[in-house]
Length: 452
Ligand code: PA5
Image (cartoon, rainbow, N blue to C red; front, side, top):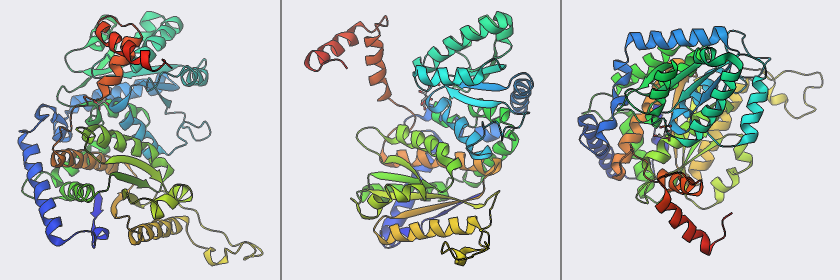
């Protein structure tokens, strides 16, 4: 369950501004539901939590069991929307030490994410960690052609075939790709790899609640049925198009901040186990909204860590940002500040007996008040618990809010034309066939500036 609090924006906007923005958000929600705006063919995620079928869930759970039984490590290969959600979920549900041997439960494999960079050092480090242990690979690519994961997959396939033989490797490779088409689906068919479908009408950054996120999440030992139930309940809560729900209010708040000249949204988390969630958030909003020279620039920070670094800038630097604070109410763990023999030699006697969670909440409230009073507006989002159900709810909440928010800006939330520019240049520089024209353009550019 998630609650949104916009009251800290009071004083930054009039009632009329708030009502007008909320009304516009509601209209955008209507258009989203009618699927009549740009990107209307990419809205499969909107009702996917109620459409996902029982066989699909069972197949994911079965594959996860097999991986748990025959592998000590799972390598998830993917980039952007094809890995950020799963990476966020594993950390959110199990903590940032999930892979550490002392915390690892023998029943759940370590999980590493590869193919999101082209660093040989990174891949080599992970291969060393895998060592002689048994591993499986889940390659996730909707298009099947994204270079970074395709390269990593090729390297891993060859290692697996050498170690397990072609047939043995095929028992350990799981391909999550477009339901009907693409190179990866063809390879999977040819080699007999198990496949999971990314529905054609769900794009990468909106796909975490599909097999894209669910298979790695299930391998981590989390209950994917609860994740789906959370998303399902969020869908039910936000489905009335005539109602201005929290997705609309959050989109309205962001839009008002943007129109009032804020160009940065700081997603503030207070748990180190949410830093990857913040990465997912940044991609969702950055790739959905940042086009046509519009959009809030999404940044993530963890408090109180970052209060002692960029906190100074936030409080007194240029007023370019507002904050969206993510808070979990009922935490799983707590530690009590102990009484010690000479109880005040460190000046902390006033805290003896106090809970770390209470102190953390005071730190959150203190920063929220200081920043709001210092002209850095705050929006607060509270989760009830850091568990599967709330995670599913939260993924859905942000996806829907993002789509409404992008429509309010007048951009298509579901494309990413800007990402192609670098891809073309890289292909041209690598002499990929078909990129000869781009190669000429890049060569011209580097006549003026030396190629690095
Ligand atoms: O959100 C998106 O659409 C992108 O970030 C993609 O997920 C990313 O580029 C990876 O694409 P693919 O799954 O086709 O390899």
